[in-house]
Image 1 (cartoon, rainbow, N blue to C red):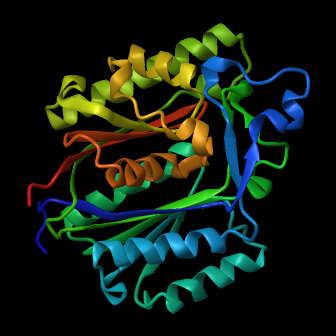
Image 2 (cartoon, rainbow, N blue to C red; image 1 turned 30 degrees about the horizontal axis):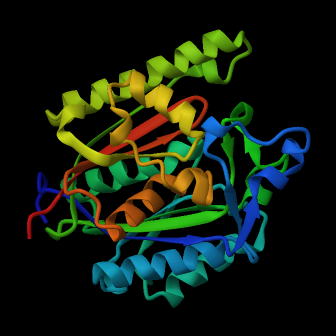
Length: 307
């Protein structure tokens, strides 16, 4: 493969925690239920460990994309649920071998919280375009009990965390979605003490800046996206409408279906939303995956390949 070739994403697949929980029954909402504008209804909880989510998501992505596991040369794992001193770190390498990816070089990514998986997709596309890799498997997944021991309600009540995983294949094979470009930004105000108004202003500027960068990089604009084509982290619906509306998107462009269905499966949300929108036969158009946390936003723009 020569440098400069296009990169394509396909085989997007997900695995959700098997247990359905009612958000209104969480201790955080004992005094009052979530506000109606949040859209909160259910969250997912895994019965087993993190590999019980990552394994099925990876297997399904390989099968759906028609990718020979032996052809995968890099695996980007966007997870914080494989601690260095835990047994799952070693078992994860065995899982890759069991799935047939014996020559795949594993890289684990973190620190950017729920934007990490979307950033990993952009990194995978860059690796393919440069010729550094031919076939990259990107997998995201976390367990709330591992990464958020303080509880499921996070980001000041604007998200309720659940367990899930998602995976996709990025390669030079012209199939599925072309990765047109990506953008990412960080706002350190999200880590620093200060009044809520200051943090809110920084977050709004963060969203606006990321999408300005994305349009500059790709030549498209928000108007080029169709119905339900913005696939975000599953924060509260009213919060998403505010942040993404300020970034130039109309309400009908936002894919919010999974906020009540699965809540916020951390970094995996945008890929889960892509898999579900595709399965539902969503309107053909470019789509944007947008992963976000209190201080990070990352976006990747995809365009459907005409078969």
